[in-house]
Length: 534
Image 1 (cartoon, rainbow, N blue to C red):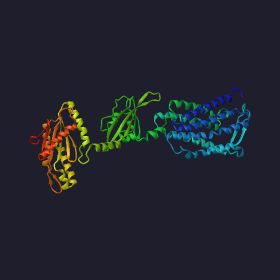
Image 2 (cartoon, one colour):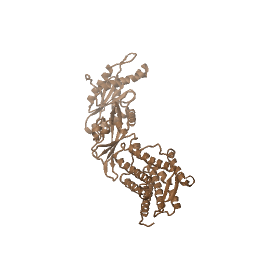
Image 3 (cartoon, rainbow, N blue to C red):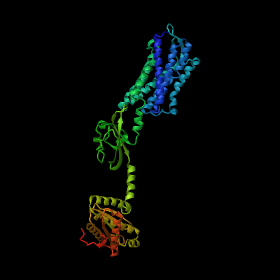
Image 4 (cartoon, rainbow, N blue to C red):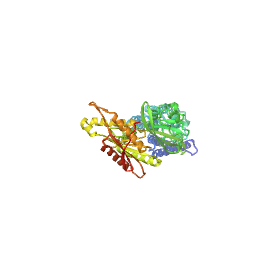
């Protein structure tokens, strides 16, 4: 056999095919963590390498015995290639039925029997009825008479390839354009060897030689190109189907013009306006149909991270979402757009609101508790000094409250506290801070209010409480309260001092018969000159 003979050139091409398959198998092995399907691809290319190298040695053999030996080596790989390709395709599109060894073993029964039949053919001749050298040829080549299992094997292999093509065709319309290039590559990689095998079976190939190993050289080059151009077997529809679509968080994919390119099912639950017709539309047009708050900040720099929280009303229910925008990059690092992730924080927000309510609000009267009233009052006092505006405080407590508890019970006492609070809320200006300072004692902060004005407000409260008796099951109870009022003066006087001075004025009201108002002014305390309540 000369180097310029057709057989020698054919052998060289077959060896190149084997080398490419080895390189693809090595690539798959070292990158198998990127995509689980690479393990299947590794086995497929590794078995293809065994088949092609053995076929090259078969072509270079000089005797029938050598040819039969390398034929057996070919069948260590060839029967299983179509099965690993089928499993790869099923994994690629998300069919999980056969993706574990326990479930996939049934697919390997016939290939395993084929291997056994080839290895033991001399005893039963069920695979090859007869094998002999072709007469009148320059290089030793065999002719075979197929046996029964040869047709079983061929039918099963062809069926596996047809199944792979059918699955790809069935899922063609369901996949995004970015994945269709990958699917075309996989389809060609399956269809070309199948066509070659059919041509060989029908005797349509040059010199009657098996063209599949040469075709594998073409498909291997195609795979290499696709791996680096379309991220074949690294980014696959399985990622979208089982990660993107199964995410609990809503995800939107936008281009640089803020047009919607893709979204998952969770996003449609949040924004019902997200239908297939929304693809290509501006996000702000869709967004405004569901959000109670203002639209998301669409004009922010798409190269930066951005995060906001929204209150969303849908179907009469209130939801809270954390909206996070991140840049979306192409494989070459160029900016392609951004992703919007909508994280449901409703439960977390409601819990926070509940805890905040418990930390700020008195459980019985539903007004500020003492701790939060003090915090808000310090802010009020600081603001008044900064704006150089007056600020006053009122302390009052219910007269003879212990007697109400002792005589009528604590439930009536609680009702009395709520009754007084309700009257005050109806009487106080909207800007007033109102809190429960102690058991039956209450505190009021009045911004932009001088001492005399605060005294008049206290007098109005006193008169309203006195003139609105509490009606219980026993009788109508007349409730009164005593008041002390103070105004903030120098900035260095702390809140505690102001309230302490108001408490001194309150004590004077209680000492002077209760149900009255006293003012604390420049170290002196005097009763208010009551005006007609307004």
